[in-house]
Image (cartoon, rainbow, N blue to C red; front, side, top):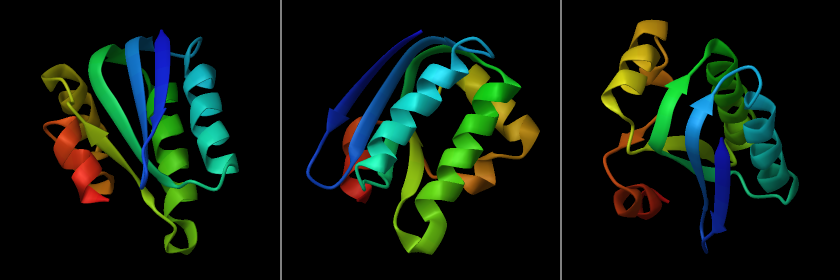
Length: 111
């Protein structure tokens, strides 16, 4: 899995490509923790390059969302979610916890 982060004025963009599974989920968690440790809690996850997300990846998303929303500091939003990933999120009941955007520009504009 490849992870690229971009810092914007009001938010950070994390782009993940490949598969998020038990072997690669810690890399994603490290990327999120680095951003939050810098005091930035408005995060966009670009999922356009993802092929698969496991339960450990979903757990990382929920934990990051909890940390971002604590004390109303910000939130994690998902952009460019592929249909098979959306199905997994919906099946797990996670779609109600995240704002979903069709493109990066709209997601950045949300903040």
